[in-house]
Image 1 (cartoon, rainbow, N blue to C red):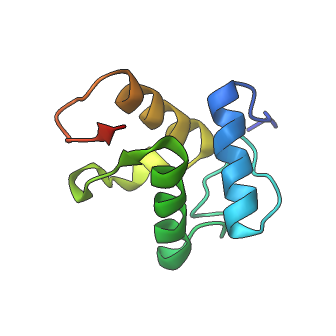
Image 2 (image 1 turned 90 degrees about the horizontal axis):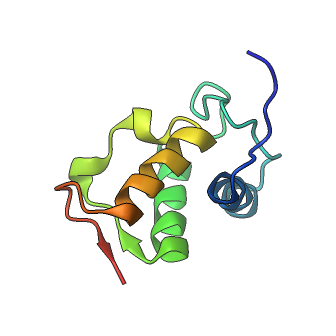
Length: 94
């Protein structure tokens, strides 16, 4: 896969949060964060907490499918959907 830096505002916020919270180099937009060793079980919880705080949301256990958090792009897509409307996962914004 070719390199693609995060280019949407939401992708950039997610990438910056990963760098800030996990003390890693900025991942490429489509990097698999688990395969690259950026995320493990502990850092995944750290990232979820940071996402909840940054976006003022609550991510319920029902929404924790690893595919939704496997890359910067996947996380941004998940957040876009949740911030646009509630899809039944009970995410609360506010």
